[in-house]
Image 1 (spheres, one colour):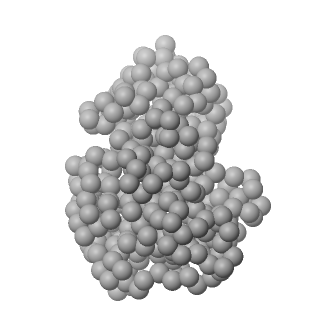
Image 2 (cartoon, rainbow, N blue to C red):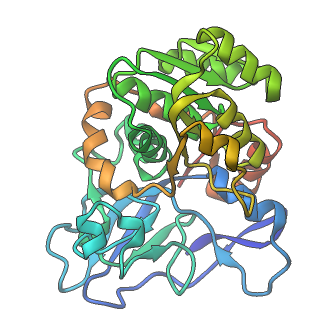
Length: 344
């Protein structure tokens, strides 16, 4: 089959790799219909040293089950399924607590002999625990929306949930990327009354307004903090969703959060230490968040897509075929695309 391989920073290739096969009785093989490029894919795309053993890329995908192992009971060949960005057995103690990203048998895609999601097919470990069946056909127009359940929508939702967003809240969302926009959707779903989106790309913040943002602040740093405080009678908001992953974004989050408030960070942190010291301690700020256990949220969020109340697939503003995925990476890296959809 054809699959996406990363050799070094800026060097993404589509090459022939071994076809996936059932290796364990709990496995399934899925033919991939849709995949995409994630913002977190850009970190190794920008920085990875050369390797002659490239990893398969991609962790957001959906497709059709082609084959199942002898112990797979819940999914059958022909089922249309969406795949969370880590696999999990959905039965261990961590999974039962809703923390599938810590599954004792789980792991990431594209390493350890497990296929990536930016290819024609993938072997799925622990298929019954990992795969989520979709009540639509493989030609459904909702597939791009449902693909966001794989990662980005659930990550935005994780930010809102761990921040404790509830009806009537005021929330600041930092970052106008796909995760930040998903955070806006999530805050709206949970009943937030005011949602301030901090971002400076007009096309993205306009989409954020469509998703439910009530205010947009384009300024960064101290100027941006002052703008949010002016909108909130000098206090800031009690809930802040940090959806970028850079140290400056977390500093900005601490500037706009109200005393006694909560910051949830879900942007993969690109810094070794969190800038939280005595001043933040004195303000009783809570710092939470972390990697999103997408599998815990997928079935909860799916009905909102199926009934049309949210359309998170609008974050996909470019579409490429698999053979052109390197261009999809470039478009996102150069900020010419918000999020690239890959159709197979």
